[in-house]
Length: 292
Image 1 (cartoon, helix red, strand yellow):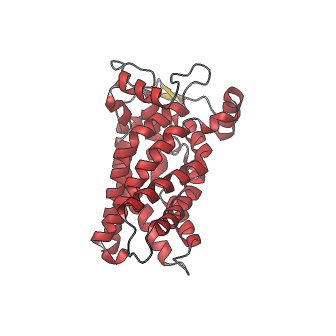
Image 2 (tube, rainbow, N blue to C red; image 1 turned 180 degrees about the vertical axis):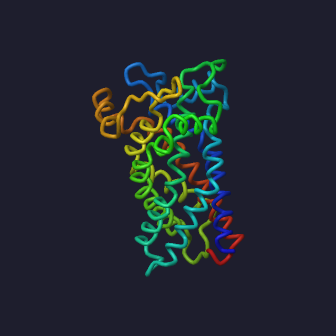
Image 3 (cartoon, rainbow, N blue to C red; image 1 turned 45 degrees about the horizontal axis):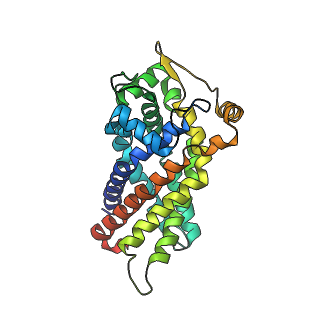
């Protein structure tokens, strides 16, 4: 029953996070993949405005079906693993224990996260620069996954897996330890629980800390996963691998490419993670009172 509470709370938190943050994620991906010499977007707001104008408001939710369909599993794994690993630590109250438990949680959900983000990223980038009447190469998440699998098999579905692992392990460690540290700071002396505003602030800041710490890795991951023009049943790639991606990106744009799209990422990180952590914490608090 205890794991059921964690699963349900994770589902609610993940759903809230996707609904709040996906438009910012779409802007982030578009800016990460924008042409360095002839960019389509001048800045974050112009990118947001262009997507709405060319593709309607729903354009901001391109690829949302992939994270929505997988959020139950991802959040069940993340919060379930983190909580259970933490309980088995010699000193579960130590901040180092929260970091290690979060790192284990990040690693464990990569098997779901990597292919989900592959599909999401391809859908978000596929209609860049197209008018509302233009037809996308993919009809949806299922069609995108189907084409990837038919063209390249499981190897294609796993594109970007290794670098996702490199991103997720430290990112989730920082995510959970930041949240724990800040909820302690925002809890008034003598109070049993952190107040709502404290939960929101802690969740939002934890998300920002996590993203800022590993953002360059995410840029490379996005470019690897978005890469590939689908034609005649095959994908034609610009990059042969991670090193080639970094080499070509550096030659074309300099080191600044590693922080392209950082602004919408941080704008997304705060409300998304504020919503996710607050919903999860409150759900566990009321469904499982002994949790907090």
